[in-house]
Length: 152
Image (tube, rainbow, N blue to C red; front, top):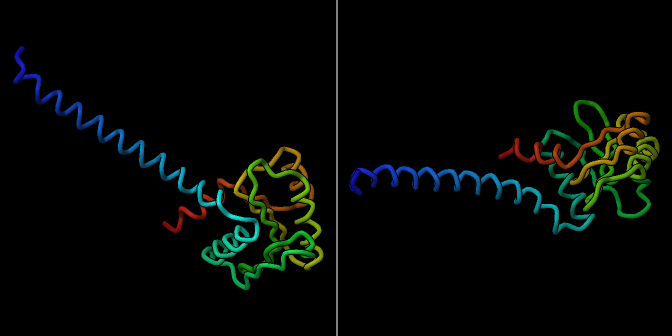
């Protein structure tokens, strides 16, 4: 075998490696960018981000409640005739039971049909159990990312 016979094979191998590297890099960066979106946000800024996302998903009468004395609800909204009371949590760790309890209390205080907790993170097992018992929807970081990806 001479060098002239090996050159096309080496060239093809290099092109394949570059293409695979590019695909991997794009997937990694896409995931990283989505997660980074939340990292620099303050709590109230995250609430407005969530409100905008809900509007994009067809919710109407979306209202961010005032910061204090909101009875555990950050967003009031409606979709398809169903009214929602939504607690938003921008955390760096899994969300616990307290957020579920706040959504439950706020749902009743604002006389809404559905209570939900929306977060960039995930939920602890006790929070999931409490949500099942109290009939509170849990919208975690994965769900939020899927909502955002639908618009791309």
